[in-house]
Image 1 (tube, rainbow, N blue to C red):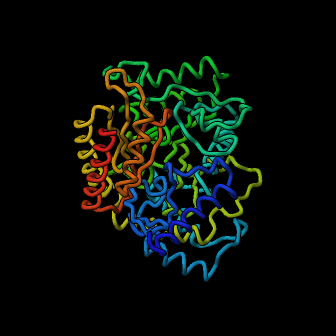
Image 2: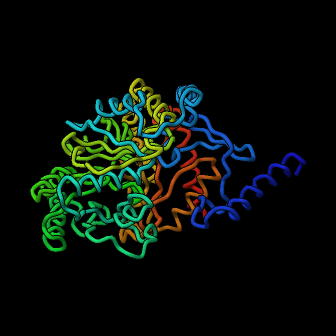
Image 3: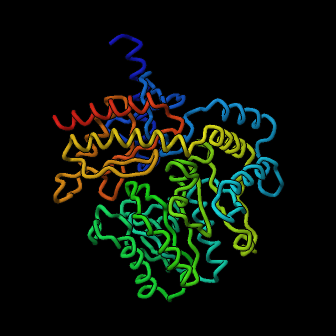
Length: 439
């Protein structure tokens, strides 16, 4: 090893040591030997040693148009030198501009926005707003769902590993997830969507006062492993919750802004207009922005004083405005559909080649592999998922991992990824799968 290599390795080791010393132990990076990322551009990230990786997970679907997109960088640079922060006590033009842009692409009559800093805060805002509007407090959520890291969000979450809070918040009930691969119903049943939806009604009738404030759901369950509900599910669940006088809150934190292909938001694939919609992650290409969007009459129900000190700040709004400009010009819904078909075809080929891939699922550029020990028993294989994650890293491909059992490989690259880059990612993933076969 030459002096340059030794110095680089020393820096990488020092970063790892400092991370362990100064950050909470729960801040755990991926991989047996974590990657210290030093710089990035587009779908390429470079670690402290100078190694280049193809990023196929985009900061958990946050760098939606690629790392350090030049238009976002330019807009933020200009903004931070002109006006950085005022708080929501003052009017700023770019906050209004972003709100107007969201109203233009949001489904139906959703047009009124409240900006926060994260998906967690957007969820908190949506839940409180539904409670204020209906005068009720009970919320129906879904098993396998993930909603964030606050006390309320972790109670909405239905993954034991993600629920550190020991005291439950009253009034939150969980219905069966529309997870057809691990369903208590026969996946081939024509009325499977109805069966999943009926469980929500039973939960309302048996575990609540019968007067829920809202039904809350991700359009595609992200941390749960990209669980896509069967056709007709959201139509029926919206009918059921409205029939009991509650609201439908739709979580588009991961599925929004064209990610699912052809539509701006995941819920539009099912022709359902939610009452409240939450979004974050890809909205500002990695800058901290959360948004809660609803109809004006629902927004008007919040009469108490409230403030988000950094929510809607000028710098993050500049990032969001630039990101939305690029998304519209590049037509991210259409791009995600085209590249998503290409990616899905490649993943289906891997399914045919490897018996431990139990299912390929997803929409657009939100695709996953559920790994199992045996396709007949569908026994989850977190060991296979961990092995594939590490093998992909060896091939300089970054993917994510999820699912209740840690057995789902998640992919969600930049929506501006090229066809050649998708092909390269599939080639690297194919080689990684071959390594898992040999291990």
